[in-house]
Length: 260
Image (cartoon, rainbow, N blue to C red; front, side, top):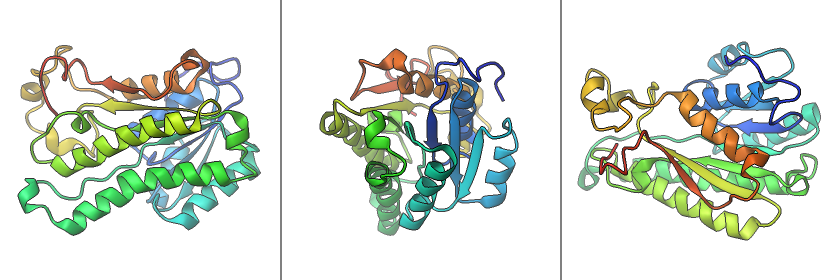
C-alpha cells in the first residue's frame, strides 16, 4: 500500500466506490485514492478476497461490500452502505470487466458475448444510473466525478480478445455521451490501459513478457499503480476542466502502432 496522503491529500474528505477492487487494477486504484485522502468502498464477487484486500488499508478508510457488479441488489447495498457509513459519494470508478472467451470473433460463443456486454457496458451504465438516483448518497448533488476503466483494445483490434475490445469501444463512447449529458454537474472520463501485469491479463504476456514489452516505447508492461495515478488525477480537482476524455495509459503502445 502506498504511504503518504491521508488528511490534507488531494482527495481529502471525498468518498469513492471502486468496483472490481479485490486485486489488480481495482485494488491499486483504491490504494491510490486512500493515499490521497479519500475513503473508499471496494466491491468484488469474492467475499474472502475482498475482506483480505480491505485488511491492507488503515482502519476506517475502506469498507468492503461483496457481490456481483451487475446485480441490482448488490449495487443498492453498496450505495446504502456508503450513505450510512460515509454520508456521501463523490467518486465512482467503474473498473469491473470480464473476458470469458478467447479466440476469433467467427468462433465466439454468443452467450459469452452477451455476458461481456451485460457486465462491461450495461453494468457500467447501471452503476451510473443507480448512483444518480440514490438520494442518500447525494452523488448528483455533490458534483461528483466518474472514471471508467476501459482498454486500448477499444481503439485498435487485438488478436484473440476482439469482442472484449468491442465492449470497451462501447464504453469509450458511453463515457463521452455521459460527459455531455451529465455536464456541468458531473465530470465523466475514462482511462484506457494497455497490458497491465495482473492475473486478469496474464494470458496476454505470461511466459513471454520480454517479447511483449518490446512493442512498448517505454520498454515495459504496466502495473496497477500506473493506472491508479491516472484515475486519481481525473478524480481530483486538478482535472476540473476535463470531461469526456479517454486517457491512454499504455506506455506509448498505440502511438507506436502496436496493439494489446
